[in-house]
Image (cartoon, rainbow, N blue to C red; front, side, top):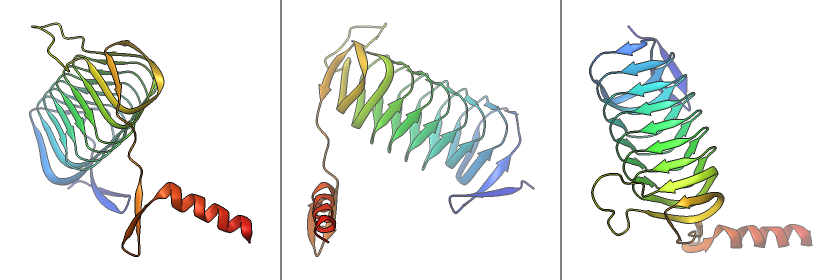
Length: 209
């Protein structure tokens, strides 16, 4: 029987395997890999924390959040419902969709398109074969390449870098489109007010004390 480990108030099942032949399908389980792990098939779990590196030959699906201590290599597509943090570099062979924010500690390569639902911070450079879409703030430590399609014709939109706001990084290949950042709202007495307005009001209140 596997031991368990509690993180963020969630009970994770701990796996010490260094190589798993075939698929690793645990859709209702919070999984913690304590060693470098290689999976020769597909991965599907609810939560994932990998203490070291993880390599998955085929598809990679995590319903909630995804945390990896070192590098991450995925041969197929990747879908993560919540946030994603990778301590080292990241390589994804197919498309990538991340529902929340994304943070990568090294370079990033994606073999098809990329979508990130929050902010994205990449410490090194980024190379995506088709388009990049980041809903929030986009920060890249070095160069950004999008639309490097090497098969067929490059269709409209396939070289776009569509982000809320680019605050760091040099676009070398691709068309940058900044869509703007949506203001975060809070509800007070049934009315929606921007967080910036609330902060400013609190600041003035404190100054008047």
